[in-house]
Length: 488
Image (cartoon, rainbow, N blue to C red; front, side, top):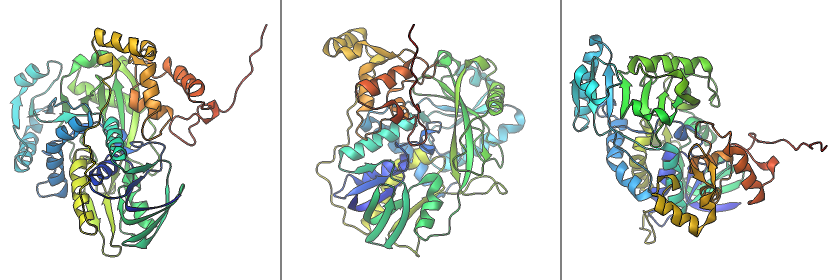
């Protein structure tokens, strides 16, 4: 591979994919270089899926501007991409009178940033809105929303590809040389040439910058663990419930977030770690998360937990300092033609559409931006089988028998939906890629029932050998060989 592009975007997270889609509006040759086996494999696929309104980011900061603008764009973007979007609202809860002044401070920041309809409510109103929640008072944020972060990132990527962009998976960047108008990017899949480079590598943004000779950045990974509550307990809350943010902390505290698909997330924790691959979970932290969540939600039962996961945030402030820095979005004087996005942690997902617009404007300072007359903003997708009326389901089964076979019992995912996930536009065929596109393996049994059936489909229908099947790419193999059974 030795292709030439106008713009190379390093990193297939939500920001990188949003940038690729935005640039596909123009007559530009664009490529996304992603080192993993699929998009959204890093921070973007491991967050709470919250569309933040901007009431807790400093006025006048880059974060505040992009947060508020991005939030205003989100519903329209999700509508175009056919990605679920729910404006469920949020309560930031003070457990005691001593925390009430913090609610006033948050409201003052939110008002200054232009967040609409903020109000402080008392304990009676908290109980009326969320009967299962304990609290002295709360800041009510009615415009806060939720989405599915990995589904959004995949949709942005697929839309970019449909409009002419290339997305190269398992293309780890090994070196960057050259200058404005003539960059050479060495990857694990060959060399790419580009006139401009966008460093949107998240946790590895400092590493990518150093490959290009820019030494000024340092990322400090912070691990955030979550537990997932069974969707059978979705009635516990109807909106997001946050505590008052801890002072000087690395996050916003352990919060309760309903998901698009009916589960509840508890988390995240916040712990500085040395390695950018240290995304494991621990039983001790899972128990701690449930314990802290029960201060807000006493009716939560530890038996309601079905699994846990962890993500890593790309912080630019060391543990000795704590707190938050502003986003860094800059083209440095020592290397014109390369834009660096560094420290894009929360509210990075919310800000992604706005960041993409800013990057498009920057590209326009170096290259002509001529509109792509064939750009199509809408992305067509099938409504999930389990959300259809019985008559519609029957029609689909009549038209294609694969709709009549349930592969994932917990989530009611059909064989046809598994096949559609395998034949995705990005070409990703790991078990994780199928999971993120279909929701198979996400239920109570966590793949105990459907996992072997998906593997059988991959082998018999797609010709994938068992020893080539992986959870999330190279190194995560599902099988190492075969065994021979004894016959009586």
